[in-house]
Image (tube, rainbow, N blue to C red; front, side, top):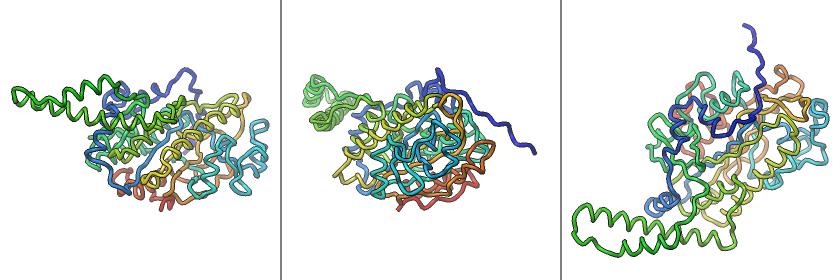
Amino acid sequence: MSAPPVRLGRPLDGITRRSLLRASGVLGATALASGFGKVGLDTVLARAGTDPLPAGTPILVVLTLYGGNDGLNTLVPFADPAYHSARPGLALAPDTVLRLDDDFGLNPGLAHVATEFGAGRVAIVQGVGYPGADRSHFRSMDVWQTASPATPATSGWLGRWLDASGGDPLLALGIDEVLPPLLVGERSVAAALSPTTRPVRPVVGRTLAALASNAPRSGGPAETEATAAVRASYAAYGRLASLAAGVENGDPVPTDRLAAQLRVVARCIRAGAPTRVYAASLAGFDTHAGELATQRSLLTRVDGALAGFRTALAGHERARDVVVLAYSEFGRRVAANASDGTDHGTAGPVFLLGDRVRGGLHGERPSLTGLDRGDLRTTTDFRSVYAAVLARVLDTDPERVLPPGSPGPLDLLV
């Protein structure tokens, strides 16, 4: 049987992250992108007060890098002559990378991640991809978000976990205006929380306080229920106002979109929200031209957001519970193109960060000379990373979530 043609894909010119999600084959994604399932921060914090996540419960934060991040200029094989030969003018010089060992270093934009790697809190899985790689942003993101490389699926992998876990929408939160397909189940849908949620204004708080203090005059069931609802809102307002005051004192609201998302995640975790999974994202990694500066800028944003996230959780009892999983829908071609960039490729590295990870490099290093029509050969099936997260972070049998025949979990977590 002849090999399928190589499809390099097109750049994401004029295509937004929102339109990418709308084009997903996951059922319900369009409705979700339009606002279905949104909640306010007050709702999340109210549940934190009445139904907090038990201490010591592992928490997963999924970070999606939309556009196809160039793995070779992220985890840099600076000692390999083939890397420099394939990328004249685009390869990072050995003296510019943040060295992890004698063979690999990180992009200079990842200073915090490099420090965390040295402390044993970063696991990097090499050569991650899937069988029959597709270089379309839309199809490849579908594969990663549904964990179904063989056939299109109608649910996301964490949506199916939500199905298996009882379906409470606040078990998983998408920190965005758009809920990603990975959080859409067959029977359940995660909640969406905007990263730009603002605290309730003081005048609203005073009004709620006045209403909540007055007992219903008629005592009828409708008025009793309304008063109870107002009192619940006032209780939520109190928690929100106190939390907001703590954030505002010396902790300004981040202007960077990803940093703002992770700031909201940190606030929810510190408050004890009953959420096991959070999803955040950053777009812009489709670097067909001028890659060096663009990618470094993007990775610097990722690095700064992760550093701020860890700082926000520092000293909190839940800090050790958090595992961050960062991935992109594909890597890039090994050879540079004529525009000082790279085109759509296949395999790339996946990062896991946190106190629960087995730090270091994992998986087989892809060869830069034994290529598949110019692309890296996948050496690690991405579902084995998901299986590890499901088993060790979400306390779930991977077979309940992943398609039949999926590989077993890698030993990435303690």
